[in-house]
Image (cartoon, rainbow, N blue to C red):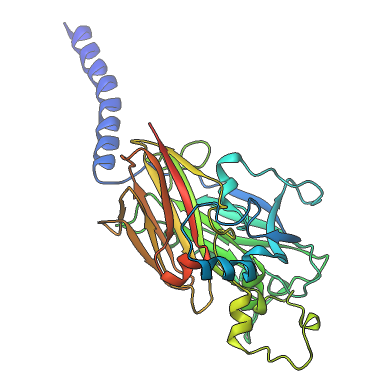
Length: 370
């Protein structure tokens, strides 16, 4: 009997170890904890490039909103109907910066925004940045992530400011940003949150030129192999951004009469564009999702004093800050995350509810298919 009893004890031990592990995993999942992933170093090759930007490449009023005659007349004078020289962040395949990395179709809606940077808590992000423009002193400054002074990407008086604060034309610089726990989702956040990056030497001019982009940070161990959150089927990033072309470094005063008052608010208004991801009046590529999918919207605003927005979805509702709503308010440089499970099939408006912004073209559409 003794050998048999020893066998039973050993067998019980073999069986209970995996059960205990499973119980621990189930208990962790029940309490919102996720197994930690091995930390990774994620490297991106991003350049600031000069481009001629068209705010309405598919034409005016693609969304088909009704317009009174005076608004149609004003539309002909609108900055949205013009093309502007701008600087934007673009991703390349390697440090030679010879080949642009294609943007996946599901991210075509990013428009003027720079490439999406992803990370999990515990990771390190390295950005090899090149200034391909004629603009001096460009940089990349991240919100939320951790960095040493030489990777802050901002210029001001103080010790430790390095070359990363002022990358000159033709130069390359590598930023190193880390993702500690305080850069990831908080206790009441969803599994992923939004940060942004932008140039921060002469910030107002550089952001109005187009130099901003998104960062998505997820909890450690909470993502699929492609980096998307496990609990989400689709993601969309939308920047409600007013571009003041009179504040852009590319604004050419020589084109205007020498006696013109450049502080005239009328001049600014004629060169102010109300966009979603740098596109107006329904020109944003159609955002498409399926009924019943788990959809995560990452929302951000730009930096002008009138970048105060009320983001509104027609036909659906979202969960934002543990509240059911269909409007999320944003102030300048604010970031927010809203989760949607679409239940209403059709094509719907997505716009800013500030009257001046809606009339000015800050509108897109999204489609829910069966």
